[in-house]
Image (cartoon, rainbow, N blue to C red; front, side, top):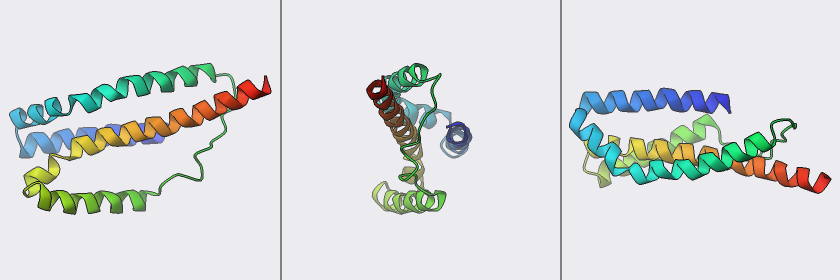
Length: 130
């Protein structure tokens, strides 16, 4: 999971940099404040992830998600489709880029949920073995 975390860190810095350059500090802070509920959803998902991760730290983890991984090409195409939709529905370029932060948060939530489910399946498998 180290590679996606590094990618999310780089993209977060890129999003904030674009926001500050294009929108300015006040609008950037306003966007971040508007989406605080999505950020709060990261807390319980992160706790569940960390709980199972620490429970299974001494065990070999089976990757149940290997058949459901999405390619980078598919992810970029999906993102571009949403960008075209946002450009028209959110009133142009500024409205389009204002959605980037929420996409970023949803991406982290999805990644954590997938990893948490994988750990949960490993945990259940371990319980059956014991």
